[in-house]
Length: 149
Picture 1 (cartoon, one colour):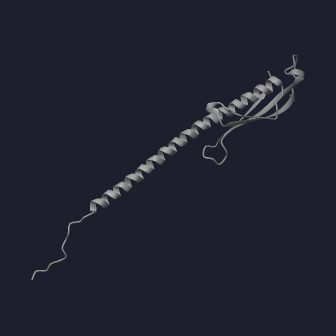
Picture 2: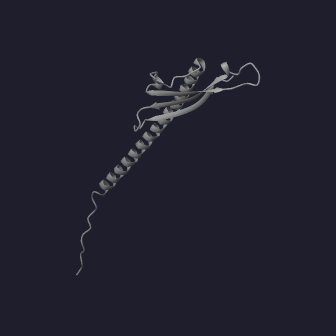
Picture 3: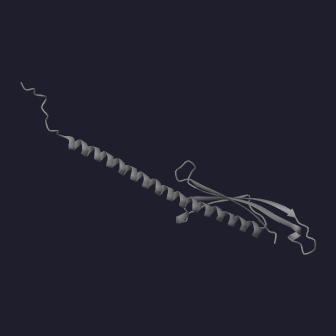
């Protein structure tokens, strides 16, 4: 007597399972590529915004130094929001702390008017967006200027 085991039937549907697996794997790789590209683009945008913020902070220092040295004094704080196309959304705050120092030179002429020289501590803060937002950047710059010739 001959023993008959279970009959082996050709496998049907194996190609379908392999195709679905490949589709899922390729979709996952596609999503990964899109996310990687998106994060690189966001990183580039933030780098550009940080460079603009640094430039705006330095511009605020130049503005404050110009006011302090031309007017022999400065306002305690000045603030403005920019509307130019490349700088729209930036806010610049400039603060100034004046101090006066008396310098008595060894011989005339006096170093400063009435031998009183002004020293101005300037601080400029440039910000874009609101803290906590993904595109928030802020740069702070400091400078000390004086009317000593």
